[in-house]
Length: 467
Ligand SMILES: *Cc1c(COP(=O)(O)O)cnc(C)c1O
Image (cartoon, rainbow, N blue to C red; front, side):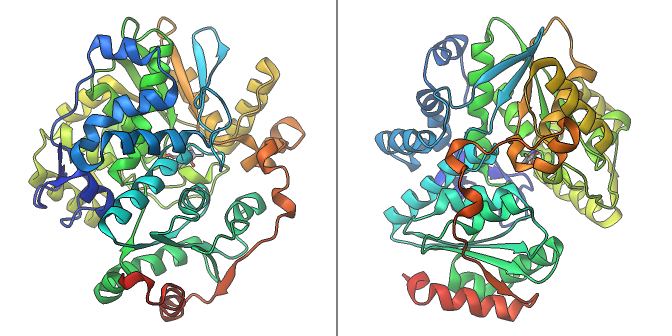
């Protein structure tokens, strides 16, 4: 199995090289050259497997010869052993024909764990085989930082530096990062905003000499391996609800388009799906696109669902690649136009064909709080603001004849203030994190200055990165 870039000019790579590369050298994203196919019997068989065995079965063709079968199986089983429900991704019924897929059962309570717990292990495994090390540097305003830290802690081939804006992330989110005091984890509070943190990370990656010397790597949401790992829960959930004999729909609160693209990938592999329903907050560029056909950037607004406060959904490029008949040159052109103009049209016919599968719905913060309250009143379930957006989107677009699964992307305890506004009390942290607020923290404060950051990183990795 080889992967090619959505922009068409980077050389095709095998899975292990794609994993370590992240972005392609032509600025594109990697996609499989051909989709591995699941037959009806495969899907039936998956319905009878535990989560980790299903994951091995689904991911094996994507990994190809890059990792030996027994190693992949061990890494997958280790990754999903860290989750706190025997089903790993349990389904709960909310209403007639409406289900909730709880994807907050991992160590850091967001769906990011389902991909990153595995990706951290895959990185470490491949690097150690190659006798290499990498330095992961990332900026976070929320869930990705803690999920990456938890996935990479104590892995000897990976040194991790995560920047967050000092005083601008919630106590729970900060502590999920800073209470991990493993020697290879470095939390940095930057005197600045989240955008400053992102600019610092970009500046580090743009310094070719530093990038090479420190062997910088990213585990961001455009990494193919994250998409691959996320296809698993869609296939497992659909099989539990009757696939391949019954079609289901999914409703996905969407930011960077990684999660919902994984559902699209599952469909490309042969999973019978009816609709993919996208939920947006006030940053509704995708909902405007699916409603009007125009992709038009607007300034980012802060909302109660910060993981979706995004205007440019990087993974959308992967969907476009298929919509343009896999012609990379044309993707490079439309993406350049979009970056330059802030708006682009992909043509009416292409838009219409996408709307046969995708629907979208946006809600504001007031409605988000109302949905949290209504779901609690009706079912007793406490949901987080992102999940509420998925449920609202499911209600707006679902076909009563088709089982619809709304994705719960985070545990409500990650967003206690919004939940308290809705139901009058804060949700409790799960038992595994009950002492989070009293654990010791370790964090370094740095000015918003790229040289200070370079010195800090170089000082911590010392001679290790050269190995
Ligand atoms: C990352 C995240 C999202 C958005 O997912 P994408 O894959 O970026 O679309 C939604 N909800 C939560 C809680 C998240 O952490």
